[in-house]
Amino acid sequence: MTTRDIDESVRAELNRLRESIDNIDAAVVHMLAERFKCTQQVGHLKAEHHLPPADPAREARQIQRLRHLAESAKLDPAFAEKLLNFIVAEVIRHHEQIADRPGRREPGVR
Amino acid sequence: MTTRDIDESVRAELNRLRESIDNIDAAVVHMLAERFKCTQQVGHLKAEHHLPPADPAREARQIQRLRHLAESAKLDPAFAEKLLNFIVAEVIRHHEQIADRPGRREPGVR
Image 1: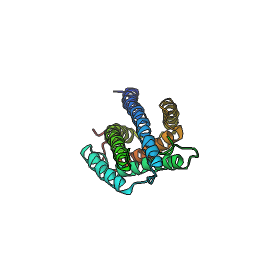
Image 2 (image 1 turned 30 degrees about the horizontal axis):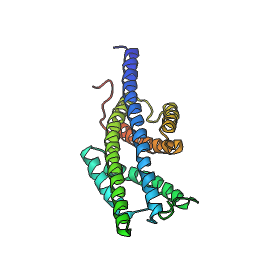
Image 3 (image 1 turned 45 degrees about the vertical axis):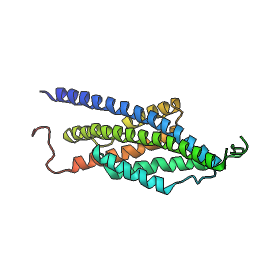
Image 4 (image 1 turned 120 degrees about the horizontal axis):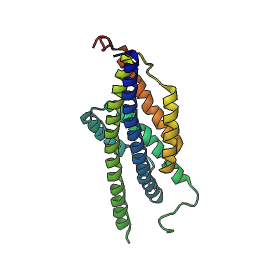
């Protein structure tokens, strides 16, 4: 095998793996778009019924569940927890925007 | 409708949305577990062939692609970019661990 053959087979293998990574990233972006559709609905429900944007008990349960799922999928549980915190921070930011928005629907006004 | 009915219907709606969020989170954790399997293989390839752990040109292309995908999925492109940076930082950390590991396979030694 020449150096050039090795280079080409390495490049082909790298490309194959990167195509899988790109497919997975597209799937994750679409899953997260769907997740934010759900959390936007949660945000509206909470704002209409004057529930607080953050819910620490729910978040603690989510973290425990995700850590277990990560372990069974051989993903670092600490990374799964950091990722959830990263996403939840964005969700809370959205909820606060919904709660602060002037003219939002009130339960008695609909 | 009594206050209690409203409370129960709100709680039911919240639970319905949270069940969907939990399903999506499980899917994302499993997609990311698969993504890290790919990037671990990339890390070994790079270490064996003495390629640098980070690849800024590839990352710039990934960011542009994900921003477009996010826009078409109605997800905030800035969030998609931050998320990719968050994941890539973890990947580079893994690649550096692989490159630093004593006794890793060298191309000529296999």
